[in-house]
Length: 152
Image 1 (cartoon, rainbow, N blue to C red):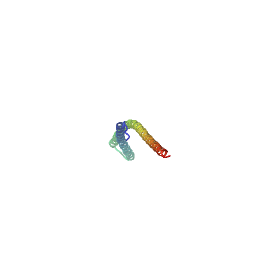
Image 2 (image 1 turned 90 degrees about the horizontal axis):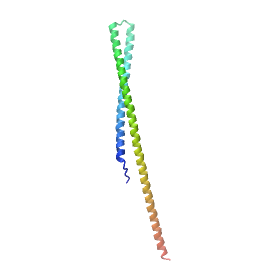
Image 3 (image 1 turned 180 degrees about the vertical axis):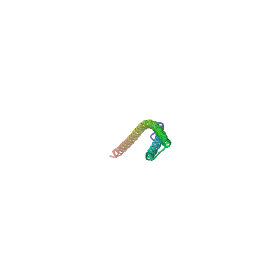
Image 4 (image 1 turned 60 degrees about the vertical axis):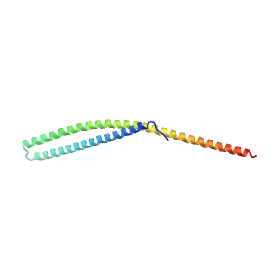
């Protein structure tokens, strides 16, 4: 039976790759949520600006206009904050992707070594079996030759 001596290392590398995949997926999901929140925030701000423009055509008090502008300004600050968060998450995602690629390469190297070892193991046993069959054939041929030579 084939025994890959680096199997514990390969198992560890597989676990590490799976862990990194899960972490990558979590970061990606977080990034998608933040992008969606930013998109909604921008839409809400655009709707508010549109409403303010429509109200501007009619009479709008200075106090109401000030409240709208303050709220729009606050929303813009929130957008900037979300953009910063997205940048940080994207950086983390990029780093995690690099870690994942590295882990996958290291695991693949061990898998290739295992495949090579298994191939060599199979070739060894095929060669050994062939030698045994050859020896058995020679033995039978020699035994037949002795048996027929004694009768003549």
